[in-house]
Amino acid sequence: MNAVIVGAALVRDGKLLAQQRAWPPKHAGQWELPGGRVEEGESEAFALARECSEELDVVVEVGGRVGEDIPLPGGRVLRIYAAKLVSPGDEPRAVEHRAVRWLGPDDLDDVDWLPADRILLPAFRALLGDRSGQK
Image: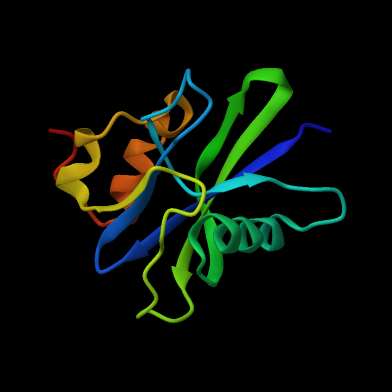
């Protein structure tokens, strides 16, 4: 079975949360959705909630799938789920990353996404309800 990497399409007030990588050097400065590897014995939803707690210091409720599976190097696959903050007043913080940023539909092209996340930009736009398409 392929290793699954889960990502959270965390939306609040019509904006998507992205985080800027600090490492590895090859990807430092690029942006991605929060998430990480599903460990042995974990459900994908549990893994995603754990990763959001570790990376953002927030509690999330995991929803349905967003977009298609994206193949990653090494036989892994990236799988994105919609998510929302359990306490909407909580502010995610960059625990393991350089920065976090809320992006509206018009901001999605303004950051340097990791290649796998960039593939999902149309799905992110749809999730945010952007009907205008790309810039």
